Amino acid sequence: MNTTFQPEVLIQNLGPDVKSYVYQILNEFSAFITPETVAQVVAKDPLELWKRRSDYGEEFPKTREELARTFRIEISLSESGGTLSAEGIHLDVYEALKQAKEKLLKMLDQIQDDVVSNQDRYQQIQQALSSGSTIH
Image (tube, rainbow, N blue to C red):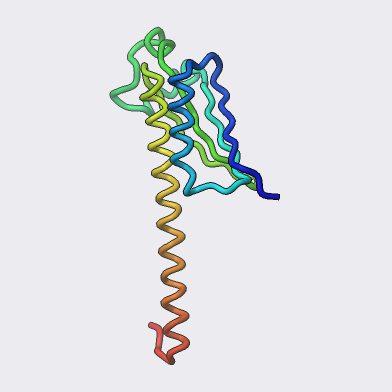
């Protein structure tokens, strides 16, 4: 059964502007999803990152208090038991959403490039075989 893509937004108390931005971001994934794909946008506790702060580099908040004021947003796409996700962290919710979106789109673009490259190579091999050429 084909159903329309229905993303799930799990951020509580969103204003209409933020909700609109979230749906705009999710729309940017339309080229990479099927009707069975479940998209989620989840606000996570930024303080969970404090112990791993060295993994984030220079832009990471310097104090726990500053970290507590940030938005940690995860965007995930799930289908057939597999999940691909990315998160952003920033003092501005729009910037955190943008970071997560850009990271996830980069992953999806890389996957697409790998798949397309393999398909192109396979087609080249099949064409060479059918024309009697030798493959080295």
